[in-house]
Length: 221
Image 1 (cartoon, rainbow, N blue to C red):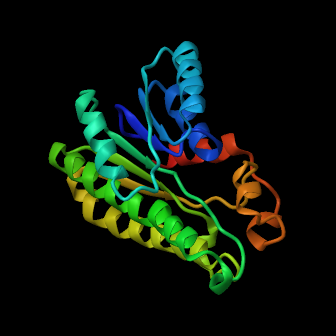
Image 2: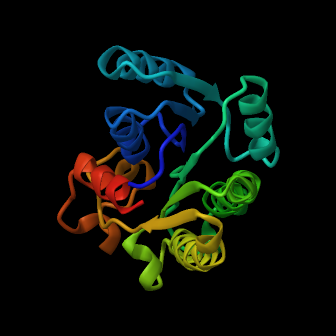
């Protein structure tokens, strides 16, 4: 990690996002915790402030909303919080035959996994480039490397995040902004249960420890 300052972590209420927020806090960064579940965010914020002596801001938002990115930016502006590091972790996964799945749910998945991270990278990445410093950590998956029948939209969304991150990294490197994409395999979090993918290649391999994954993401930025 070569970037100092405040880290905004999306999907911070559980799983990799929670572990990433803790990793940044443990290394002295103030954090902005964004997710839907306000109770979990408040509990995490209190724990991080007590343990590490940092400032933890809570912004409870449904990041699948089309307006979420701009609302998040308005909220950080209202609180006079400068986001120096953006961690795009939020995401969901659906399982089943694409043509039989609920289309609205699949479109929500694209909004959450692709559109919101893209918007946030544009919004905060522009400010970082203007300041000449900053960092973006996008969380993808080993699913980014190959297609995934019965999780087709999820796999495609992670392939997008990998390619998008690599492209933007090339654009922003000369502006002093580091962009990294984290591509873990199966991680021992509640995501596996929510996605109902225990019997898929993505969910049936050896599980990685979430804290180890978070540390790799932090060190890689």
